[in-house]
Image 1: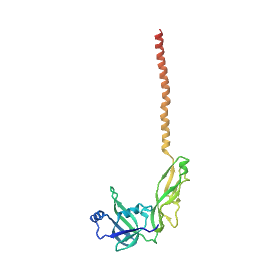
Image 2: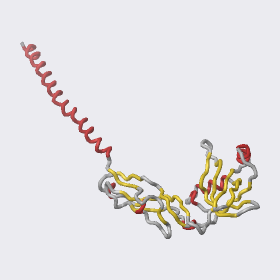
Image 3: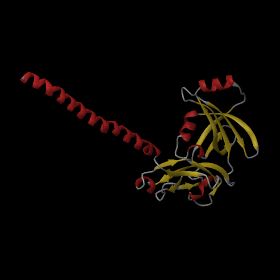
Image 4: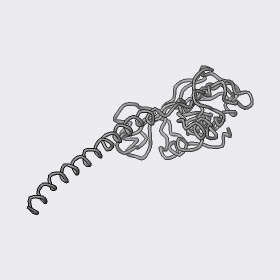
Length: 230
């Protein structure tokens, strides 16, 4: 993963809710930087730049350089953030310093490839259980996403975390038996079948009643015609 993004930051000397409100009113967002044995640093950043990173393909796994005015320039990752539930504005962000020579644990999205045989041939349902797994790797080797082929899955079969191919020196941290996705039977169709049969039954019974009623009408009409002839 290329470390080609730089975000400028202003050091902060005060903390608290009032200071945070002042920063937001001025178009900045309060942030905290910590990690790799150094002191925690409070800064202010441009929220638009942080949101752009969060919405990128690599999301919060993106490694970028935080350039603190008059201070350090260090590789960091976003580890936590808060947004306004109504306006969706960035309220606060936590960043962790990254040592590019040390392996770290991150969560990476998993994409399923292909249509399972259990769906297209057996009429089953493909359910995705887990959309990401934890892996360990060097910072510059963090995958954008991982992929696993599910086209051979039949009903009752599953792909697990251990089935996901890992590139380079990436190592699985999640439980190997964790289910990524599986194919199950369509229970809804099994329940619907008896209901459809039950609806057809009254129609079959109704027909003799109509015929019987017709015969009765004919019998009632017969004597009336005969009386008229008399």
